[in-house]
Image (tube, rainbow, N blue to C red; front, side):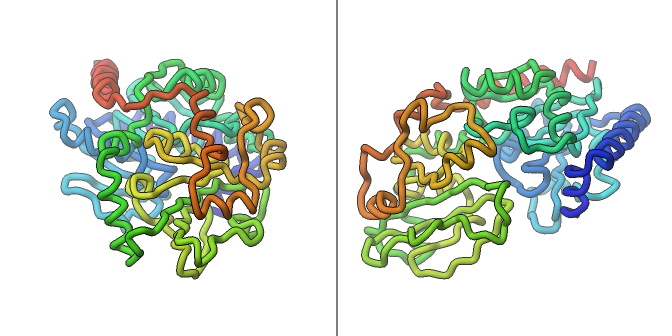
Length: 383
């Protein structure tokens, strides 16, 4: 399936054929199928049961305004998930998915739910939460992106798009020019972080007990982003000898991007890629990242954030940034030696927390404002 997706994305001719055939198919389904009181959810194009769509789903289940709605999740592997009673799961790669999609009256996603074909039905309310505050360029601003992807970004029309502040609001105005209705509520996925911020010690203790670690261990979360310009066979996660020494009392919690799988066996390195992300962020003592939007989530917890970006210039030249933190803000970037120092102690001069204030993001999540807007939008669609 992934090979087929790559072929469609990378071939202009096949992409054009795919676009028009599917667009016509969507038009037919939209006009043939009666819309039901049904909401369909996806997270990361069917890869996960997570992120902002999952948080919204949990609240929608409890909201009496949506009690008459059937709730459906679409996954790549639906058998891998145990869903609450009353919620169905379907395969996002099946033919029946399209029937489910166009018989629904509400779409909720953090990426493209409609297979990168930006068909907009007047009878469907499309809520997109996106999946983070962008530091690296996305959509039409990317140099190395397929025609199909660019077309989706420039033509998709969300009925509502969540933003965290003025910074991402301005970026999304150009990235999604047809999606003009933005709502400043913060990312729903950050609500658990805000609500459970006072319980960080408890989550830390639970993680220590789960992996049988010492009480005084230093938990360092390393979450590098995906690098499209390198082969997945190249281990760029660790550039040189940058693992913590056994005498540092540090355990490195490694969380890779969902496109990557890394097998690394070492007593002071734990692959936590399948762990609950919120619980990881709450439990860990500090975050080492590079260009991932995760650092903006972690910023809400007021704990040290460091940037280990050994290929900053290369990544900037290939992908590009909306804010050049290195050139404009002289942000401290760890090298191999300073990274090793962080394994022992926090060092204020290398923390990037203050620089991240440039995004002026909300320090909370207004979930009620978002649910109210959804209820109004759905009511208007049904009229």
